[in-house]
Image (tube, rainbow, N blue to C red):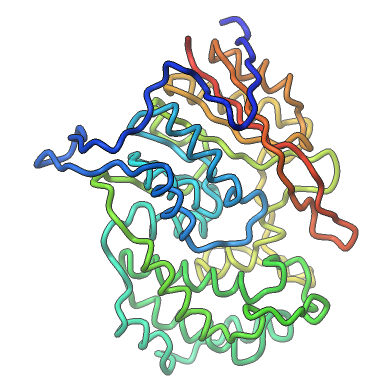
Length: 387
């Protein structure tokens, strides 16, 4: 197939005047027993629902880009979608709110738990009795977090609570367990300054924010309530996976949304380095290896070809090929990353005959070191389709 035709659009332009837009009509959705019916929400209603999703500070998170993504997804249309790099989970949740049957995937565990609790789960909430049990006295005498991270993160009482909470979470199953873990992860992320675990001296960034003042016990109660509040059913069975993008079995959805790690020209995009504590917490450090020689007690780095300049193009090309039968491939990428816009159009054009590019002004925080700054960049949305 020859390279696709690139069409440049501003973020407010229609993708294609002939695309089928979502309506508010009640319609029967295929594949549902009993011909279940549901109302397709307006764009404003979809965004209102998606913007209530509990916010996790996450590198490359798309919370601020939800209006643009909602518009693109609505104009592409369809009923099935893959979110191949789910991260914070908010885009998977947006797609669910738009009425898609969603396959959500990430190579880390804690994003997959969040998506399982909020995207795959359509009805289960964590009841008050179970919450009070988790907040109560410990069920056993475990102290792994207290001893392993002594003096590194949080207060002694906070670390004691994490061990105690897990003594109860280990006895819970199903979506209730997923919600409990998701709430625990979000509690830790909110309590840690800047939401990353690349440093251990939290006093450097203490700015008086409420999130930093609350105990993890208080955080947990609030975070459970937040996740409970966003559980809903769109009458379709979505799923959350954990694994490599090329192992996702759904290869021909109406929309394949790709938000891979961006390969920066400098610094790095190592998610394990930044969020190792959250990843370990989500499994209580079972089947993961702590690098004991590191001050932050980070986990062993997991290789991803998206992280390196020498492998990023092959990684993107292989992913495009994997989803070549999708109705549309929608890729988020930054102007401050490698490869550049023209090269991505060329790569995507090998599998889709028409490539449209939407440019959105945005700010990203690159790096977590002291000299890192917020930079004005463009967020590109590449929409590849067959004419």
